[in-house]
Image (cartoon, rainbow, N blue to C red):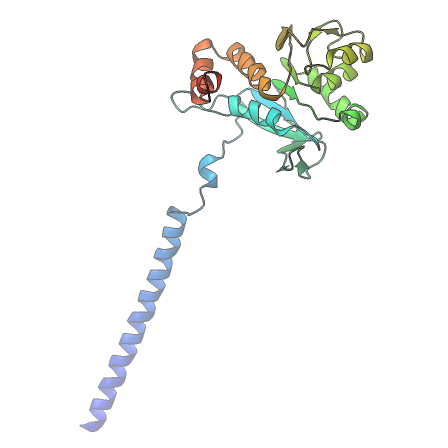
Length: 251
């Protein structure tokens, strides 16, 4: 009888351990499913997939770039419409895949390099406080020349006009640069029709658009947005950005 009790106890123990083991396996699988279904990281929620059927807006970047001129364009073209539909691909491009450091000290990782950049509908050329390195960088200048052959629009903000001048792509066209920089721009690139930057904030001449840069970079982006979509969508984006609050702000 004693032996029978021991055997019964052993059988019960084996069954219990087996059940707990299977339960542990089940819990592990459930946890894995929950981790997949409810990720704590929300990155994928905000990524906008590249859609080859959409117009592609390219944002040129380089070390020392004024980050606001990159952000302004992405701010305008990166937002969806009223129905939540993505209207554009917005991509950043640099000479190499290494992170670039902006004038303000932030680090931006480019989506593409000059070698693998997709076809662009529009190219935005920003500025830096010191444009010497970029104007004398043949790879940057050649990239602008090459992309201009396929773009419907080429946009410069602030001293980005120096790169447009160096490339020669806008010779004979009107252009504006940063406030105070027009006189020197005209001397350096006499084939450009440089506008009076103390009076002109934004100008469009054919496929070429330009602005004074800084916050005026929003103007060039919004003007092109309206051309590529419609006035209603521009007003929607302006309201999304609270631009009326900025214009009407008083201390």
